[in-house]
Amino acid sequence: MFGLTPEALAFVVFSLGMLVLMGTGMNMGLALVLTGAGMAWVLDFWDAQLLAQNLVAGVDSFPLLAVPFFILAGELMNSGGISRRIIDMAQAWVGHIRGGLGYVAIGAAVLMASMSGSALADTAALATILLPMMRQQGYPMNTSAGLIASGGIIAPIIPPSMPFVIYGVTTNTSISALFVSGIVPGLMMGVGLIFAWRWVLRGMDLPQGEPLPIKSRLRATVRAFWAMLMPLIIIGGMKTGVFTPTEAAVVAAFYALVVALFVHREMKLADIYGVLVRAAKTTSIVMFLCAGAQVASYMITLADLPNVLTNWLGPLVENPRLLMAVMMIVLVLIGTALDLTPTILIFAPVMLPIAVKAGIDPVYFGLMFVLNGAIGLITPPVGTVLNVVAGVGRISMHSVIKGVNPFLITYVLILALLVVFPQIVTAPVVWLR
Image (cartoon, rainbow, N blue to C red):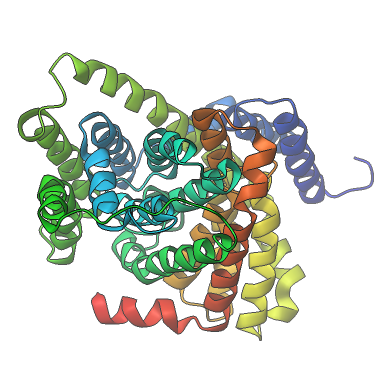
């Protein structure tokens, strides 16, 4: 057909199909199912039963159980006062300095990232609490919104990370190793935001308050004790082998529920229904993406597209750093159009074999892949996290995009640094595992 081989035609169907269907605003999971079905038709491999089997296989995975429980843990944290106590503690220690609310946002983002693993949940919590305070104290809203959006995407990198779970299941990579690989880069993102925020503050006339008495600071820290204990339990339990990453998600959700109901007492039994409904809605979106991606991935494999891509990138296999740089550039472009989860589900199984063939550590590649996809969450035109901040703060999308630029540049520099010096990621993984 059209002088193309079935494999080439399948690639055209996949590429154009995804572009057209995304342009119509169709649900991403459904778009993946339809493009997979189109590829099956042009490959003369149409079988409705096979499509149904792949849909089921896409979510039939024990490690994927971590996803709904981490989502539930994030909802419980926000509803049960855990997130707010983290922000209150950060404000007690650094809120008085010039531009202090920005540093509060960064510190809270890092701490909350070690609990929920969800960029959207963390961003929504930070924006809901901090943006009104920033507006009241005269902070520029575009820059403040950009900082909070940038802080929110630390969540997919610092463990426990929901995208790492999805990546590990999709590519058969050790989830525990991926969790460990994210610790140093996640902290680097936090430090990078501090320097970027200090640079942005130049020339701004922002209020500077008096430091709180040490007793007030300690009181805020004690109030956040149960919140800070949560990441220690999760990471410590996985490190010592007490539970797996999947079981860690269950422990996180149960711990957040107990703290919200019986320690902080900011939730009632009647509130649990609403929390479960919100978590179920988010879970259904993610799981349907996984199911749809399995259909598309099966057809991509059948069309031998990974080998086609390998042949295109073949000359770069002898130079791993150059190959990584090229793949990161490709993923940056993909990230402007696709959300993090579909990017992982579609492209990770295709790109990882090429990276392994070039001698690139699969855990290091996984970290770089997810970090790149997380940066895509704050790049227009899609920029899911940007939309969350704009909606919560009632700020125009244009203003948020303008405000995020200094922090986006910082993240790109960190990404480039990790391409040049992969030991920053690989050395801690070897030492901590």
